[in-house]
Every structure is written in structure tokens, then in C-alpha cells.
Image 1 (cartoon, rainbow, N blue to C red):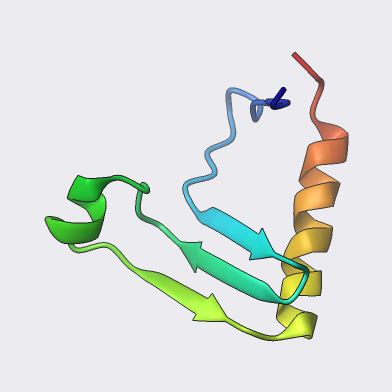
Image 2 (tube, rainbow, N blue to C red):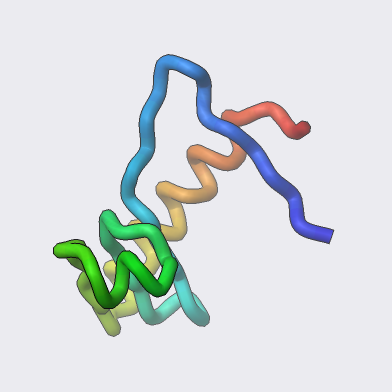
Length: 70
């Protein structure tokens, strides 16, 4: 089972964030599709820092905890 939540209708969050093992972060604007990786000019950056991962993990939890469940 995967839990899903949506932002408020007046909010747009375009960035995508992947947090791995609380130590690695992939942050970018592209969709994770073949076309976005190989055919469009999108950007992502990879961090391997516990401090950076902690910041993004805390931000995710803050967003997650304020949104209603479906």
C-alpha cells in the first residue's frame, strides 16, 4: 500500500525529491520518465550529505503532516 496526499489546489510543487537512507538526496525539476531523462532539458542534482538529507527529510515531513489523507 502506498499512501498518497495532494497539495492544496492553490499550491504548485514542481520539484521532485528522493531521499535515500537519510544520507542521499536527488533534487530536480524533471519528471522521472524516459522522455524527461533523454529528450528534454531538465535538471537534477545529487547530494551525499547527511545534513542536506536531514533538511529535505524534515521539509517532507512538515508537508506530509499538514496535508489531509485521502
